[in-house]
Length: 116
Image 1: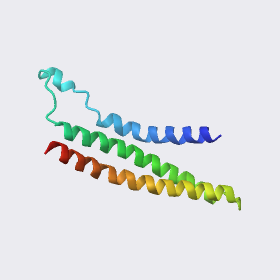
Image 2: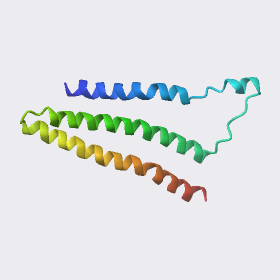
Image 3: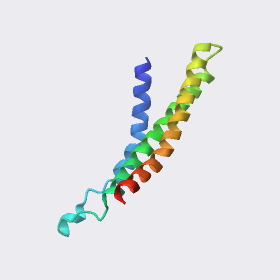
Image 4: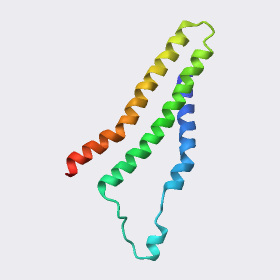
């Protein structure tokens, strides 16, 4: 049952970001008409874009798990195990969101040290 819940949350988060992911993809159709030429993005810009997109997906996933943890607490019906599990999930989500928000800054700092 737990595996099904996790698979459900992962599929919901994937579907929520799927449309945005396809909208952001440029398949480069105009490059074929104007001779194939790469983008003007440098490696650090490409890495920052990749990390930004990954952090967006993980942020949505963390919010979904936060909702799940809150739902567990609200529907616990005086069962201490469910309340404890819900609190644990909410604490883990909070820690995960802090890491997600710091990840972009950490990547920028590392890239500035490497590329200088």
